[in-house]
Length: 500
Image (cartoon, rainbow, N blue to C red; front, side, top):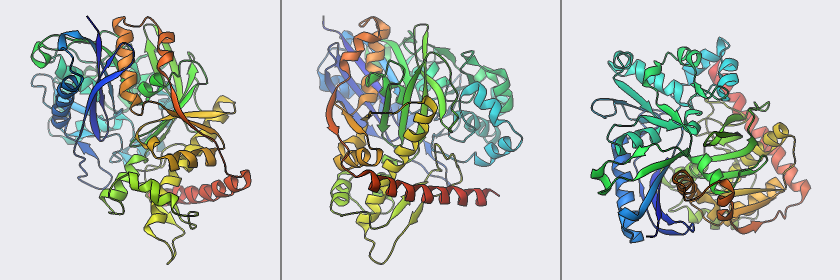
């Protein structure tokens, strides 16, 4: 009997499921958007029940579209939006509050208070992360302190915390398994990446009872089996990994120095740094890249909060475009940016600035400025911020890059890919399979169930289908980037004034 793999990719704006065979061929898939909620300024929430419903809908339709028998599905892999936080009742399985999304900034003041008393260094040394609302710990603390009865339930061991992967795992196993993998645990600010365990001191700093935390497993562990009611038979769940780490697996980043950049809702750059923890000196993160059996590899990571989300904002909030494809034509129609720069701090500024209070700022508008200039400025900002990450990462790793691998939905915008090559001065290698995140989760699950024996066998699935070479003069490249740095610093400095 042929063997198949079901991969679930639960992302920030949508859920996707796909069926692949052991040759790495995708036979069927299905995607479903979910609602974004913005109840207050800088708050972002999701409905966990909607996400659960969409996950099952996507799985059922992917299986139907692939025309395979459920009994032939050997394993399930799950990848997920990281840091997004859910607390649910252990007895009912019901969330006690909406999911607080990684983009949410409601805990900015709380994080600033911890910084002022000198706690960021302790958190960074243990977790590899900076002190920022981005990560799960402050979100957990907010729910415990602001939802009536939540802290009492937590202290009585009645609540479970999880990122989206844990919540889906709990539901798929009908409450039998409360676990996560090491990559997702490493994004909470509560996990010690050196001891590879939940850290009592970190939990105490955020006032979080340790009994609500899930068991931490290797990325390719046997996490459990699905309840019979969902698919008509039990399917082992043998892979769980955070979305950016899944993309790195799909891109074949298995050796130290390998680097990938994913352009989705945000932009995330990861570099494999091998089996030894190395903390950044340039405001990047150190995180777990994966754990396969007993072997752990770490990564340096730079995060840009607004990439595809910025294009969505242009469409849904400003009405400047009808669909994302228009941005490519609008940007290409202009000879240059018309002097317009956009620092898209619509959800704070990520690496290497880390200003949670920063807000989006547009510079250089005149009476000649058209909507096309604003659209182009948004796309250019993605390239400028990518270069910010490359500069910081090369300093930390003490190397000079020749190229970067890129994936995610935005790589279909070829104007943006050429702009990346030009502003970076590097070759940009576009991944053959756009939805590499789900693909990586599927490969991981297949590794976990024994379809593949080791990472070397997965290398053949990493393919490039287009290469963009830089065509801009070095003089122009540096002139444009120097101006960007001034604008980004201005925005960051304004945020510091607001904080004071």
